[in-house]
Image (cartoon, rainbow, N blue to C red; front, side):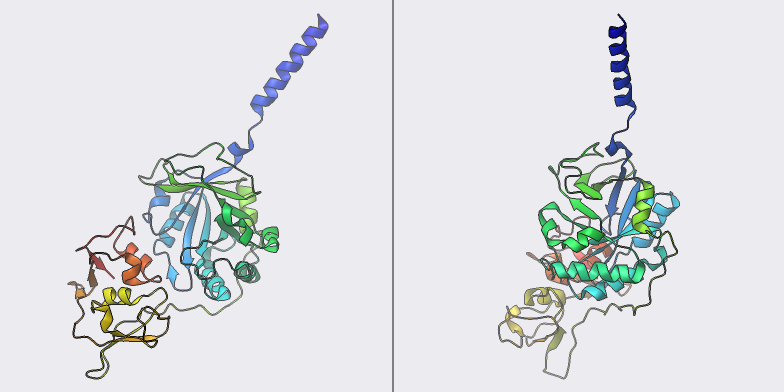
Length: 358
């Protein structure tokens, strides 16, 4: 009888322990990442433990909603982070641009490099990642996390992985979902953070969001933000100044309109941006309108005049033509700003006759 009682008590103790131990996923922090595609107040209302806000891209783009989105995170006492989207230009210059932009928050936020293929001229160049994270660390003492898809983890050098936490994106599918207790392949890559959907639906925001788990608590988060628990003062560096987008100029009589080619431009995109058609009327240095490079000057030799109109407040307006795309009209370096200016929820969806401010 005593043996039976002993076994029963042991079994009950084991069950009690199983129900009182909190699974690791339940202790982890739930969060979102946002950019200018969401509203400036998304972080004021959505349900989260942390939010990572897009700060910069390349050396000329800053999220116009960054300050407001970050302010709400801080006012609510939540954990905050900032990310830089790699443009693939000079890695040191991009790191400086990022650090200078988030400078007031340093020591209280985690920093992230967003490494993706879209609009990234250095995609596939692992050394670029190394230069960027080393520069951020040299100026701030903080090693940034590195975000990328699970399929491209091989692009992150081993020395970077040994110093920087990984933020891995991998979706089982992209069906609408809320916060999940344990996403598919959670923790498989030893990641610090996991993004498991871009179609998240949570309380406090009427729209899709990227949903994430940080594999730790606020103490561990703060160690990424400020490993030395000191006041972080970045070393000085000259702040890159964004250059205004080149506009068509009319030189001497009969010389035509000239445009300086921007990254991502095509002649059809320049024609759409300026309203100067047909594309065959453009003169390019190579003699082939399909071969142009950033920094070149191309000249319109036709008889058209710009079709861009101006609003009552002086804002320039482009009227969308059939077959045009946002990046085709405004180039790889300008479409995001235009999408934000016009509150386009889906930048891939524009239609003929639509008026776009820029």
